[in-house]
Length: 425
Image 1: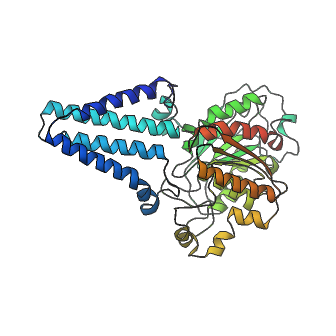
Image 2 (image 1 turned 180 degrees about the horizontal axis):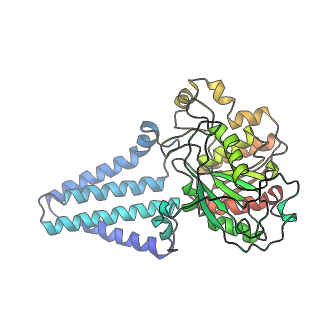
Image 3 (image 1 turned 90 degrees about the vertical axis):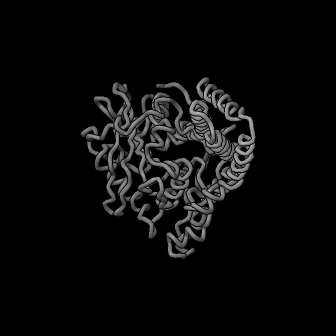
């Protein structure tokens, strides 16, 4: 099931079939076909022109505009649907069936190209994966968590005779009252070995809309972290992918507000559960917080709000500031009753201007094709340096807002933070 859906022959074949199917839809003749074509072109053009306004401004599903690639393939999908529906009017059964099949093939091709851009389902196995395959966490190594003054690389020589695994577990909002979806937990081979070391911790958050399983599926977390372990003598942090939103449609902005006590959940409930259940190195100097897109913003929030808990962070394509929608005033109204000062008091840029963070290290990354995100990254990384943080930046060439960016950024980020979290000398 390791067949790639983002490069190689499969997406090309699907695209070719889609082109043939579109040609079939366009092959009709007659007055009805002309009317259908004109209507299809009109609706496709409106889709391209207005889809961003619909999802960003009206429905407020996302705070940033959709990429041009997504707009183009959405317009092509609308074109195919209208042509297929038009082909059903006053047509025999055979041609109707052919039109429906052609329309479906074009829709699959459009979805495939959107997936090529986002890399949400990198392989056929990822597409067909099911939550029924999840392994539920049944207990740690048996050793209690302890705060270690020395890095794990100086305490453990291996070998890692176990195998890495992904398990799930709910993390209750004991102090926050927040209910997140179950965490996805990466346990390195060393953790599953007969004599496991007390390992450092990496807390991760996915984008929004999305959930913890996105890091496992689109993010290929197990493969990425196994690569980190292979490059560091079998050592990698235990990675805990948590949910600060509770649902795909929800957005807490990783803050304590009238929406949810997400900050309390991430800074108190999550660390307490990890320490109480996983048997890890509880020394926060060896911990990191990372995220992709919305999760990258969240990572910077944790580092600026709680540097004593998360003194190391990885911000991959994060936003300039926490946001639910493109309407900042509405976000502040929803979360803080319109109190802009309350929002500013916990916003990363404000905190970076007001405070010094000499003991915090941060890694910023973005794709070269996302100019606005690149500008945000430059602004944030500059502010972080001016606030005393040690900062590293990475631009991933030829990539937009795609999972290919965290794929390329997470391993070098953890290598750069390796001495901090203790997996390398």
